[in-house]
Image 1 (cartoon, rainbow, N blue to C red):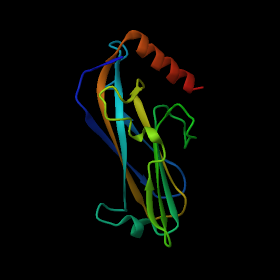
Image 2 (image 1 turned 45 degrees about the vertical axis):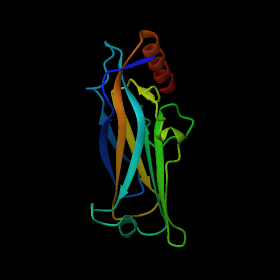
Image 3 (image 1 turned 90 degrees about the vertical axis):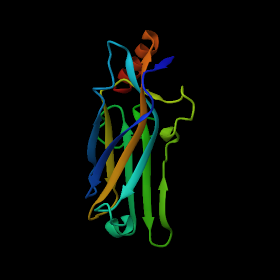
Image 4 (image 1 turned 90 degrees about the horizontal axis):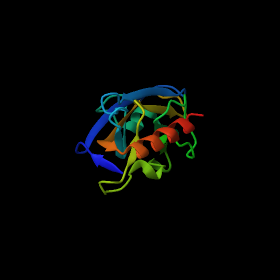
Amino acid sequence: MATKKTSMFTLTERITLSSTSETFATIDLGSYVDVGDRQALQVHSVDFIFQGNTAAEDIVSSVGAGQELKIQVTDLNRGGLVFADDRALVASGNLMIDTSQGVHQDSDLYPDNYGKGSDDGRFVVNDQLYLTGRATGVLTAANITVRVNASIVSLTAKDFMAIAIQSTAADN
């Protein structure tokens, strides 16, 4: 299905949450995806790193108790958080902070890690990945760094077309 053009590399982007409204960021894939050459980005895994207001500040001190921080990565711009059955969803995670229960981090979508094999992964043919974050309560600030482990692959014409059609169908 896919022929590897590169070894695995990491793309990173940070999103800063400072209110209960949704916050957005993007990862530009224009240099990696090429329709003419049927070149796609193969996402192997996505990691989320939750940090406080500064790199040295503890997350609990920064956001306080009774908070939930949500983060999602999609390959289409949905304009907000999406349900797990949305085909554009690439990865999703959350961090819950409770004074009596402690701190709990969860990658709540199984494709956060697509497997260890060289053929495992999610193929992205769109020119951007979209990050959406949200906090449930008022906070000073929290930073979430998204680390996308990926490689560049060449797809057969049929495979590239199938992924592009599925992505277009998911846009509706």
